[in-house]
Length: 499
Image (cartoon, rainbow, N blue to C red):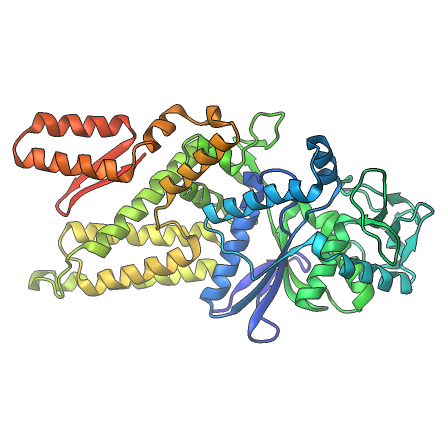
């Protein structure tokens, strides 16, 4: 089944394929490491993660390049306020970003490209643009891109830019999203700023030039796909196209993938609204990394997601259902054949699993419809659970269900339970930063109670029940419950989980 994806450039859903027939080469705009990543950032990176996982599910190789912006206006300003060199300042936030990505089970790209490690490539690109008389130098030593010399400017964002004023310039990296003016390629040295001595003069790169230079370096003049958040479409991605194609005279990226913003409780996320959350903020409130991942992927990437805490609670329950179901099917002793009276039910169950697999695959192949893909799996879960309850699940159908869950988890990646470990790591970080007071008090208490401690009490409770000491067994259950540990008695033994 062909994988199809909406192309922002053409405005249509089109087949996505590797132009060389082997590996799909794509570039994703990565973090600007001036602060901790927020959940809006991670929604984009999670959908890019699903994209690369689905590409691989279709048997296509991946060469994924992601940049790290480790020099720009915000970084210079914040590092100066912190009294730190920018390389030390950004190193801390880059490390935190990749820790958060790992906590959310995001696969790492094949190539991470840092802006500060690719200055020569940026300078060379500016020199090529100057040779085309598209880049020009101003009196202060800065270099700008002359938009009027690139007639296709606006092709991605579909903006009407006929009224561009020739020579009107914008210096800031973070400028009005409706501005269409000559933008900075290279910024002349200012007092106190980090700068590089180069053939085009001392200074530092503008924000847009880095992605063009590194994409061309690692993926070639033309590649398969460019990804990022919708906020980057204009001006950043528009500028990337202009810079790159003005030099190479070939199409920069064939396919463009943009992820929509999220809202928080129906409002735009902002610190002034008090609804601005980093991943670490949520972990310290007691929310699970797996549920955060599942929620951020619950709505297809081209639709706006409204992040609510009620929805996060629902996703926590959904992940628990999946894990409990997976464990049940994996550890159950299912018969090779059903009793004679139940034989007529077997083929219909097999067909349900097959259709669920087909719906799952079709949904993801159709522009990454994560909502429909999830729904297909939960349909199978309900039917197979019902069959197991009625003692009509065979080993053949159980194995087919496990195979489907494996395919599901190769994309959604929530079945492995690392939540307590990840939350404990967040608490350790908070303690090191003097921020433990921001953590939920009951969470601190619960996680001070180790898995070994829990196992010991569960074993003691099991023994107490065997000895008909029900008062002690109940006391242990209540003690664990107060520490946020839930027990589940089943015919296969006792399972426990943290709230």
